[in-house]
Amino acid sequence: MVSKIIVVIALLIIIGCLGSGMVYLLKDDVNSERLVKALTWRIALSIALFAFLFIAYFLGWIHPHGIT
Image (cartoon, rainbow, N blue to C red):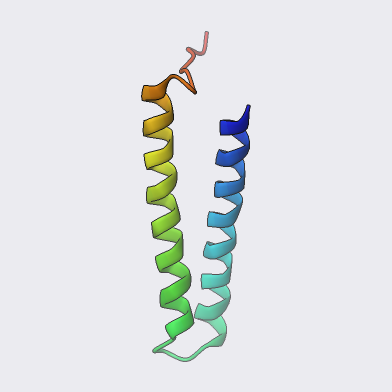
């Protein structure tokens, strides 16, 4: 249950970083430092989430299920 909450929170933060990057893209000038930082955070959080899912699977915290 805790792993599901972590995944949902991480996805919401990733979407927030993506949204702020879009706002910075539309409002700031061409060489926006804030845009680069927002998208860098998004990439870093996405990699961290993938690593968490990978580790959680091998530790047995999450289990795949088939859709029937």
